[in-house]
Length: 368
Image 1 (cartoon, rainbow, N blue to C red):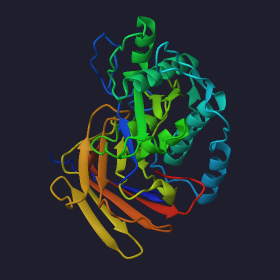
Image 2 (cartoon, rainbow, N blue to C red):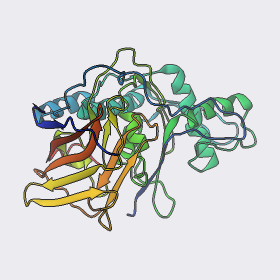
Image 3 (cartoon, helix red, strand yellow):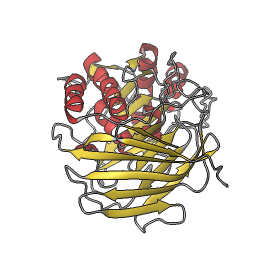
């Protein structure tokens, strides 16, 4: 049986399968240990938006250029002036301070723009109690001078300050921008850090930050910021209404800004775990249509500078296929890529998915 949806093809067989200079350091969030017990941080699959059902959602077919431009105009960063409402202190006496409301909302809006591109609900909101946690965490990381989910309690940091900060450190995406000399370069806002989380430089094995941002069940988040240390609360599954989906791809089907597709970008496709099961036979065929350049990627067939793996850890949606043909691949505006994934199993039957991603020039977005 072949079901065709606009821009995306899902094939199902009823035969059962046999079985640089500027750097951005980011840490994915997972269960961690610390000197003091931290709140439980689960990596279990989301149970909202991925509930068992007798049917499966039609594959997402993508956004069009003008729709993306219009949504960007609504969600693009707008804050001016100081990033802080109250200046933090990362030396004694320690104070958390606070982000300005506009800069914080820019971070939330950036999350929603990424989710919009991926075809997910783009109505995530700031959760005020988490804002205090995240801001304490950012100051703690700055004071420690390192990016870690288990920062030390330095002399002069009170137990209440430390405990509040650790709640966020153990349940957040963390980022810090610096150069090879250690000087802060470009990680100017919370919105900037969201782009870094999505690009996943140095975190290709799980793309965990991206998967938390693109978790269908997410409804709330919050940001903390202290001198290029960014904290984004990411463990959230509070969406009350189920969101049915087939796949969550990055870059997604349809049109996609070329500025969000840097050379090193790992591609990823997360599949709803209520219908799909890992097989060990997954194969990605990627065709650049301007010259028919073709890459076939699997566990047993990876280019020297390429990437292919299947990750089942519980970062947002647990079944994720991660691939990249070549770190030095130069993406150009108007490049069009057809992605076909075979070796899948859906509801006990062999299946494959095919979609097309078309890049376009959107210079007002600055990738990283």
